[in-house]
Length: 326
Figure 1 (cartoon, rainbow, N blue to C red):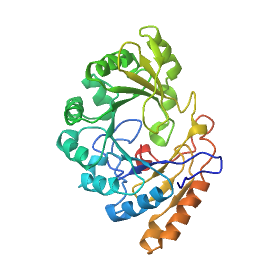
Figure 2: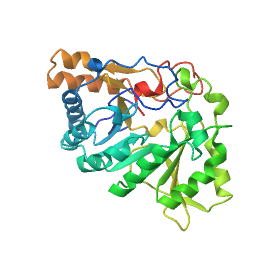
Figure 3: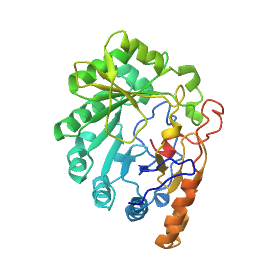
Figure 4: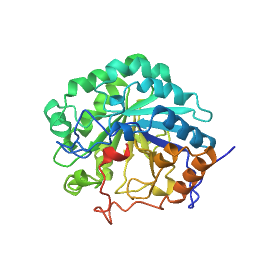
């Protein structure tokens, strides 16, 4: 069996694929209000180009694929792309990250196409706080979540970015919400990435403190969840609820990083916290052979750094989160 390793010995088995840099929300930590400097659609990889790149990754041992954006459901005919990708040799796990605003319309098609698991960004259960964070409507997200539950996605993971002075008081409410609906909950630390992340320092909450708060209210036991992501899980005793903690700042997980990101314009980014990248689109549109494409992917993997520098050099990353993919 072919396996892909970086120069630090980490096995790369996971690609996060951005199918658009556009979004119908404007989360304060991701994309600023009034931002319109999106990639032009002609610069987006076509479905055929995406399929070709992922076929090459699959041949190198990548088997996990997460479809992201921006908001991936902004991309037309996304279930068609998922169906094509689910048929690729080696790709056996396709998941989706979404804000769920359009999930009511597309949930069934996506499930049929091959998406098994979804992650939904939900930072608040209070309509006014949700609107302040995202400039969107909470009820659309909740409706999309219920649609996902109805068609049988499992697990459904709720991603909550915990922000001081914004939503940190809702941690326990979100636990109860996920207990009620059978969702998995994941807390995420804010990351100082791009201009939208400059105030992350002011809103930063160390998730070790959140965990201590929860341990004073619930009995937490070590937990495990399927998937290739970086969350460290605890299980609420006597329930099926797993709570994950994603801690890129307080307890970085770089030593076990198993992923790279492919942006909508065909650029491989090897780390969220570094600028190491390699553009594939020029090669693809110049009619490169399969061997050249494979060689470029291997070259990109060799660029992967040992770790990010969010804490040491927060000014280093100039791109918005939406440009790289979740």
